[in-house]
Length: 306
Image (tube, rainbow, N blue to C red; front, side):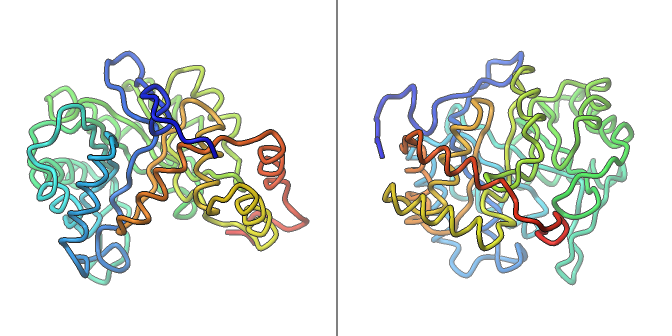
C-alpha cells in the first residue's frame, strides 16, 4: 500500500461534472446505512450516526449520496442534524422514483405526484432550497438489473422542477445505455448509478462510453453477488497487500476508470476510516491481473448468481 497526502490524489483524486464547475473527491459516502434495520426507521444510536457524518466531512469527503425514502426521511434528517449549515463545496446527491410501504416494502413510484412530493420532501428534510443532483431511479427487472422502462414521462417532470430552480442537475440510476440516450433528448445527465463491481462487469463498455462523455459513473454493491470462488480470490489478493477485501474492491474500482465515483456506506467510524483508506492503495500489476481475472465466471448462469 502507498498512502499519500497529495491533495491531487487525496480520496482518489477529483472529478468535475460535465459542463459545470462542480467538483468532488472520487471517494464519497453513501448514507443508506444510517437508517434502522432494513433501511427503515431510526438507527439504534442516532448520535453515532451523527458522528460518522461529521468524521466523513472532516476527512475531506464532499460527496454524500442519500434519499428521502431511506427511513423514510430518517437519513436526510440525520444529515441535516449533523452537517447543517452545510460546508461550502459539499455536494449532496439524492434519488427519487420509489416510496416505502408501512410493511417496509420498496414501492416503485414514478408518478408525477410522487416525484414532486419526493423532491419537496428531500428539500424540507435536508433544509435546503435547491438539490445539487437528483437521480431518477428506474426499476428494471429486479432491484439491481436494469430493464428498458421508458423514462421520458418521469424525467420530464424532474426537468420541469430543474427549470423551476428546485434541482441543479439530473442523473439516472439502474439504467441501460439506451435509456441514457432517451434521457439525453430531454435534459443533460451528469451521472449514472448502476450495479457494478470487480466480479460483475456488465457495464464495462457503458463506463468507457460515459468516460468519453465526461459523465460520472457511481457503482453500488461493490461486494454484491460474488460467488464463493470469486470471494476467495478477492480474499487472497487482499491478504497479499495487507488490506481488507472491501478496501481492495474499492481500490480496484478507483483504478478502473477516472469517471468512477464511490459511495461506500457504513454506520461505524472505524469502518468509515477503513473505507477511506482504500483510496491510498496502489495496485501492483500482478494484483491487478488477479483482480481483473475475478470476473471470469465459472460455468453458471448470471441468474444463479443474483
